[in-house]
Length: 433
Ligand SMILES: [Zn+2]
Image 1: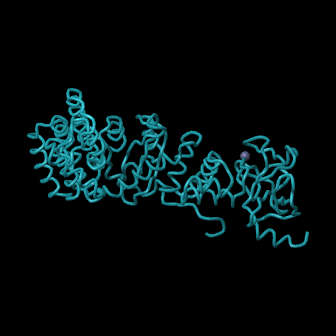
Image 2 (image 1 turned 90 degrees about the vertical axis):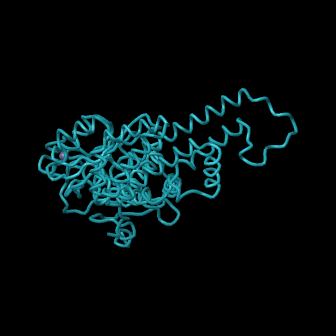
Image 3 (image 1 turned 60 degrees about the horizontal axis):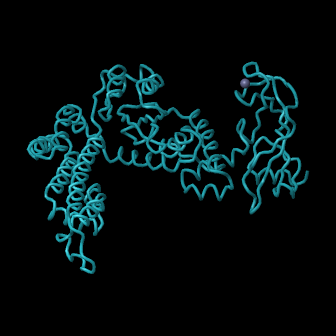
């Protein structure tokens, strides 16, 4: 065929001969007939080992390739089977696509790159594939990346965490490298067996190299870490300690809201036509309950990220609900402890504990007891200056991905997406290496 080499270059094919190109009206696509370059021995599609011919298989197959201009491209070739000593009769390996894939390498790699860079809609519309197909593609791309990089090499300081997905019904156990901020390992489940499989993958020698492990105070993590990495310093994850304070604050806020609602029930209905109160202090209990609901984000957010109206809400709480405001200050105080780190952080934590012990707000008195109980692990985190910002941002990103991954088939595509995006080995576009 004339221009065969030109087509081969345009389509980014290697070790492949282009035998014909035509436009297929029925498929509404350019169909390119190809075959592997002669001289390449027949190999098993699964393991890549040389194997003898078996049969013609199911005849010719088509693979979706990258679009040419505005039209879709399909590669067409025979897909005979070889008789692999290990896998038995298996479709032969082809140089343009992964085994069992309906898309070419170039197509797969482009989808993986897009999935990490763009929105769900951008990927599915641009590539004209379903989100589930994106899930299958990134899973197989990820398997290939894993075969070339050892993510568990050189780990010293790690963080172990559980992340919920499927609207909080299911969990992943994830391991993050504190030094690089990369996600190094993830698996569905949150129990001893799941975490043991991480340490199994790490191996005994590399377990011994781990110097610090941070985690929230979950018993199962504590148990497994003790058994597998006895010498590592166990640190509390500052991210989780601050989250405990946010939970305590939320409890106080809900209590304030319930009180306002209870008082609202005994409040006489407002006469028609009466103007609304001008200033927040004069709000009735009904409006007050509503205002507390709306103040939720102002209470949760770090002060430096507050919007102007959230600042106003906080100021209103300070004036009208000193107890809720004190709870807010307690939460912020605890967050500040981890900004100081080291001895300054420990002193600040001492002061915080005294303050919380006498605050007469039950959720914070309880939190104070919990913190005293885990004091050694928290001090270790302060001493070793584990970067909370790094872990918090990785955590936030994984949680965002769990939402993006909604609609995928099972947890594997979610894990693949998280590892491609946060594992430190982002996918490359085809032929750009
Ligand atoms: Zn094989």
